[in-house]
Length: 140
Image (cartoon, rainbow, N blue to C red; front, side, top):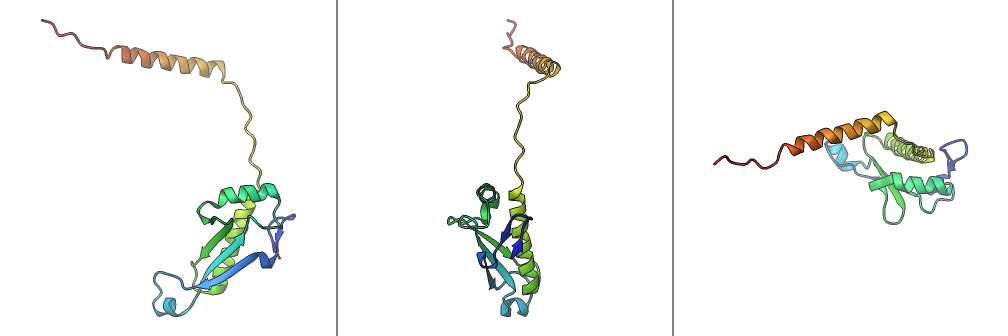
């Protein structure tokens, strides 16, 4: 059981971990040992997430989201499977925590009278500048 918030927890069977060979430098070790972790979490079909959190999570996932609604996280920063596994799970938990935060609704406000006057004055000045850019008559 992976605790996300006091009210949300993921069951261990909702997360699929697959170990793959990491790319990049590392010499012989990188060619022989599968230390990178590929974490898959079916966000669209998860029973543990409330509907509002699921919708925000699918929006936040971005390029990590597949067409099937599965979040794919690759962790290959560290040299050991254990640390990469922890890294992948931590990144998933942080992503879900971000999704639990409700966006603050925007409250429409009117511009102040002073800001309205500044805006109109700026428009007048810009208009005056452009008025001076008219055609130049050539004296004959």
